[in-house]
Image (tube, rainbow, N blue to C red; front, side):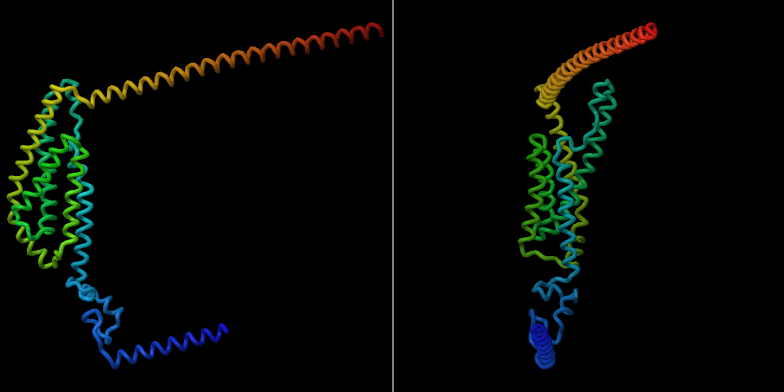
Length: 307
């Protein structure tokens, strides 16, 4: 039965192949719009230049690769950069130790480096990269509107960071990913030539970015001044919280140290007691042995005398 079954399968396979070969020679019909029976389905999909057309999309495999790589790069940039931009102390420098040591000049110099050189550079990088992404993701938006949206996002994130860093993180993360979702669900597709044309339109407007960066620096300076004034006038909640935490930690440490010392004393007393008992026991056994030896020697002397 098994051999007969295998024989029937072989016959059926040969029949299907012959029918398919005959149909490819005699008939030509459209498949996915432009695929004919004269073409092998596998060869058609291996032809990367027409894979987009076979799927009903007027895109080449190069365009599909560019879209995939672009979304990955966009996601990596937003994921790694939004936390950095959303922190109140975006550039943590150890300036407090210089203030406590009396080195005010070093502290002032550190602030100048932090907010005059490093901060503008960070804002510039964020602005250029994100405005570039948005410029290509929203082709219907004018260039000025693209720059306005990006600088508004940067300023909004920085203002929120001085209120609540979690809110700033939500702004810095959700808005860019929401724009990516809008782009993916809209009927916007670029070819390589269109991307190059958009890039040529974008390059002449890079000079305008400096004005937006200056505006962001001005807003950051105002926020920093207000924050320092608040710290001088109002008590710092973070310092109080740190003091409370340190106090609680010290109390717990003291409790544990007291318990450890108590157990240590108990163990020492127990060891001393057991040591005394052992010494007494050893002395007692030693005395008994000596007594037995004395008794044995006296008995042996008596025996010798009697002899």
